[in-house]
Length: 459
Image (cartoon, rainbow, N blue to C red; front, side):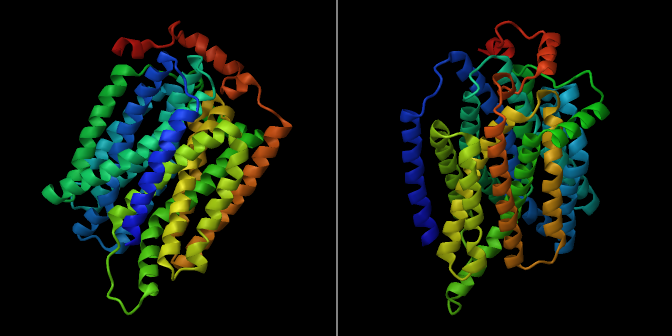
């Protein structure tokens, strides 16, 4: 079967690329950097593992509780809406009250969301979705904000930030596969709610690790939340590079989250159209999902190779264009399951390049004093896109046309960002994400001279 053979071929290619990048792409021999990278990745991957453990069984648990499709749709819309409205506010607390504290809050809120899964009650489950939406906003802003600040404040080479993001993407894919297998194992033994209990345990461990080994850092801790919002809006409005990043993130992730909702029906439909006389079979979701994750890992290796020879702003232009072409296949060739599957793998490979690339660019251009706030502002149009798609009764072809349109616009904006970088190169201080305000913040926070505070304590 194409899904199985392709998965093994992808694993071989992924292994070869990983070995190639290890032997040819330069990395740091700095012991301090390696410790720092390890401390960040352990926490980040615990946080992502908790999220991945829940994903496969959210819909299945709602169905098990007897929720109607309309109620399930309302629950999902509630989650995205919560992320857009409440998550933007709570996620922005990181700049004023601390990024480490916000990461701890992520663990607490998501663990409480897991508790609500034990109740077969629509309103309690909706509370869980609201908590989960807030937690998701924190997950995709506070952790990266903590990383970029610590990386820059400790004086590590700015180019090594991309290395951390690439390893995070690679590790996230491995964790996703392992979490999927683990969730299946516990669900088979103890029922659909058990993966959420395991996720809660992982979240508790993550909180303990964060409180033990991470130091605290802030944006502009003296500014009020209103001031932080005004600063974020001002930066987005006046700095065209920041505006470009926000548009690229919202458009690409909007297409990506929509793809997550549509890949199963797209492959199922193409299977039926390939040979309508054959009895309908259930596609192997687990193997397909694993194949997608391996494709993302391949993308992370391609990122390391590309970033060695080109700037991120440059090579992301064809990547975004290729991702748009990939999602054209289910529009123009919906009857060909092999072609649709291969196109989805190409798209996932682009996702694997996108994540570390976006993190690297944000590390360059997003100002430190309001980093978390700005990153949460970026997620507002993203959530609006997904909610719009969820609430419309659109055909699958129309949905993929929307995705292609989003990606083509993102490619054009990336070209705009590339031209801006040629016209106004970023100076060394700005590349590190530190302006005058941020240097002042460093002085006020009185970081230890060796810059390794909690890491050295653990070692």
